[in-house]
Image 1 (cartoon, helix red, strand yellow):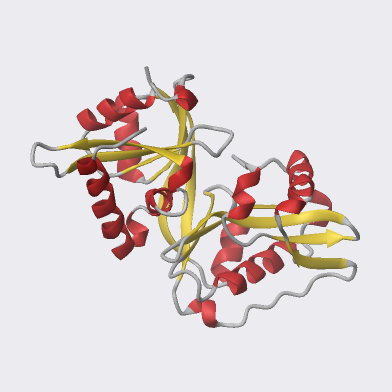
Image 2 (image 1 turned 135 degrees about the horizontal axis):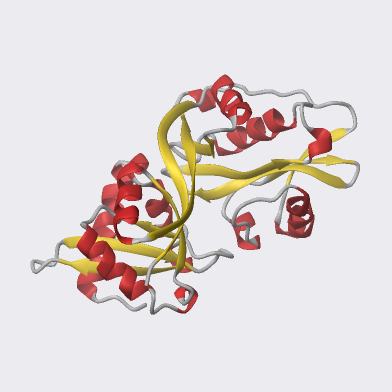
Length: 267
């Protein structure tokens, strides 16, 4: 969707603001920078051309995900109405990983189809400088992945379903995998990776190879690859899933905030 010069300037100003505080809205910052070419942006301005609200709608995922700035319920309704005119939004069904106040805004004006509580963890800036090591069982090998490994990743996710995986995600930052022979049995990648903030995600280990140090090895390698390339390393896990939370905390991550993975409908 084409923006006016005033709308574009408002987005640029918002981008610079979020760069100064990447943890305030990491998803929107990623959409405004690394993922900008993969998103449609809807912008509402005040009479003085100051930003009233901005909403990003993805085009690179197998579902329609949004991220948005702080705004009033009235402005949110306005922008979501415009979003329904986009080709990828014709179903009227959207997904969002929302912080508490953004979740409340969505609930005020939308029908919630489902939601799952998660915790967002962050690795302090100095923690990534520590040497992380993990020992794999004999016969397992850790390798860095490329887009050429996408078929193997898709096959693994058929066994261990992942949320919203698209092949383009493998071009956004480092991906690593663990192989047993030539079979991919564990994987971890990124949802986005910018110089300001990176979110590790898409992690999965085949059920036959759990409790063998695979998750720790994958996370350790991701931290090594990202250290010095991004200011903040984030990871999310379901609130009810204690094992990943314990793993993250054992490696220096700290709980940052509660968020909700939501699917909702409008229109």
